[in-house]
Amino acid sequence: MNILITSAGTRNKVVQAFRRELSGTGRVIAADLSGEAPALYDADAWYLVPRITAPDYIDSLLAICKKEDVTAVIALIDPELAILAKNRDRFLSAGVTPVVSSCELCELCLDKYAMYEALADSPFGRAKCWLSEEDFHRDLAAGQASFPVFVKPRHGSASIEIQKVRDPELLHVLLRQDPDLMIQELMTGTEYGCDVYVDLLSHRCTSLFLKKKIRMRAGETDKAVSVKDPALFAKVASFVEKLGFSGMIDIDLFHKEGEEDWILSEVNPRFGGGYPHAYACGVNFPKYLMENLSGRENPVTIGDYEEDVYMMKYNEVCIRPGKEICR
Image (cartoon, rainbow, N blue to C red; front, side, top):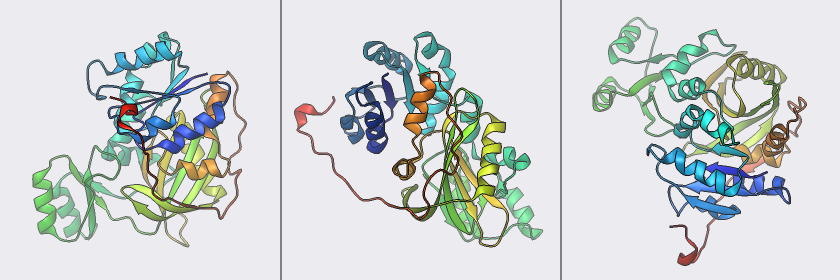
């Protein structure tokens, strides 16, 4: 069983986890646009590929799959997910499983306002959003909105261009500069992350890992501690099963001490940047995926991990001689 990981970037821990689980039974192949993506060099083989928007991008992946006898392909960045989903049939025809949710769900998760609307019928609270300055000021005048607010791209990922805005003057300038920006109510309380696995065969949520975020850096969890909340687990499982997600999912939430509601902030249908925390605690998504690819359903093991385990990221470096850099 060989796994292709695309847009590998700096996610060397995901590559390492798959290599560890496949030891003796398969290989990990990594691909990226840049030969300076360090995660490439933790794989068994690596390839340079065109940009994900290039017309020959899928052809390049299929060529790798054929050459390396790939069983499944996994993307690690949001903008690529819908591209893989749209080409699901091409991969399946080549005997390759694209581990990705439906194209509709991938596009929904990438559109923050559409997700806000979809959460109206969910078991979660949501931060109010506005697409126009006029709508926001109407609610502001009615006492249904207040500063500060977040301004963020409607379509985007990795917390790029998110800005906290405290006054109408700056809000006006930002919205005039970029028509894709939207306004979001400021979320308060403690931020949490939930790593979720939905079984590819049973379509049930079989695993959840919840962490309280202590510190964020560049849009990813930098420090966190494992926690449990059975009531939240039930809500998350119901939510992902109802919408029809598949495989690995990363969910961000906010919660205020003493309140019942959890605010769902974002859903990313892929490995989250903080997944190594879950893996170190025994929540083994690579193993669950391999079971599914072998035709076996996973048992439900939600909450089967230890609480009060801390994750603290630190810098590593990848040193390679120039002759070994993928070009």
